[in-house]
Image (cartoon, rainbow, N blue to C red):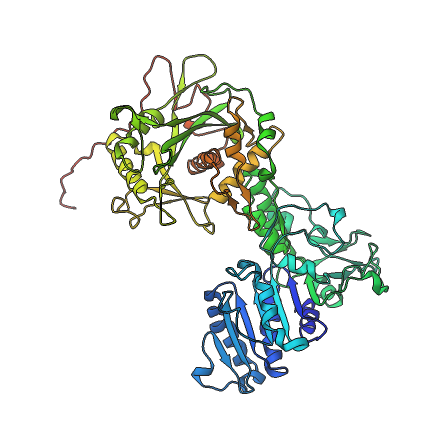
Length: 640
């Protein structure tokens, strides 16, 4: 079923190599071969103590209870070597009659130090950090554990890529089989002999590499219909290969080291031109994978690409390239590479505090800064227009409370300071650019529920800010303004939703499951914002950068960078309020249904000014409060 795994398995038993690394897509049979296949061989043919490293202890436990238990029971050679004693067969350690001990663990300083093994392997290498605490590289520690075994020792690592390419090289600067530079399994692959899997064309009889780019399909409005037409095209003669030929081509396929095959698909016999290494490294892509159909690959790609084109969200596209294609992902939006000076040069000359022509709805966003160092509310006003183009029309800070002798506010200490947000933010209006005297009301105000409180013993203390935020929301209910205000909080990066509304009942005694809290996938939201301000040409989601803003605003927008895991990181001590506030506004737009607006028939709050429910005429007073519906007590009849 997976003939492309034969050579990597064979290399595990060859003494000329000290390590075998396999890079490939998920669900391709690589884990089955490189873990269970390797264990079966070593236990029955070449016993020696083995350490298997998983991404987490939970994963190691699941593997021990399910996959290995089934494999051992179904393999006669291993079944007869099991001692049958419970002490010799537990979740983390298994001992066999021939003396071999198999240990399963995650990458910790304890598991990768002060122990000696003949074999050491890591599965799903990129699902955990490359480094182990203060000890350094996980892979180097594995090499040290098998050093005493000399040439009979072996280290294995397999994974689909899980790192992004932060500084991509030009294609012409890479060797034919070289991966783009990044950490994780791709970095290990580049250090070895760089073997790629090739197919033999049925027409021109030359070898070609079945990369994702060789997968073609007919254009169709429906992704599913387009996916059904998928075929692989030889890059030299353009011959079409159907999926029914995939297994035959896999059986006839060959692995070639870097330099062992030329650009014309001809085998090179000059060994001096071929890369050599003590690490046998392999890389194949999803087109080859036995359990991945071409139709499914095309369908998933079209959906992920459409999502990126429509809203700038790269998360689905990144997951597709990393996991289904098996290739390190190069970020499409280069937001982290755009400097403040470049954005300032592109800034538009729209007037501050004025709703520009084409603006349809207003979002207010608040960043709470608590603690003793410079406490304040930082506020921005965002306008969205047709196609979700956006403007930032105002930025200000609330610093003092006129009801406390103009003392400095502190959202972490004084609950009454939060009431300033009602008149200065929630009820704030901005005039339209047509000079009619009409004003626009905010659709929604989003506010950080935690804020940056003071630190206590090295840990962030924000509970008081959260409690005051919940109290403020409860007070808004009494004013009939709670529908115009939402608290937000950054969620863990593995949530499925971009914005998820929750009702916490354990974080605070004041919540009791009655206060809506928006959990944000901040990483994806910031990807969207970066894609918007990185766009050079006018179009959907174009960011009209504010010409009235100073250099500090642009510095805050561009201060963060993307790490090798694809996560936005803020340098210590740097200010990033502009970026956070833009992300909050993006979350509010999505929460209100902005991504699903049909601009030919938009909702009333996003309609043209003359029909917009949030545009107030000059001779009228804006109304914000929602009048509670009267509740009637009906007497029960004979039918209840």
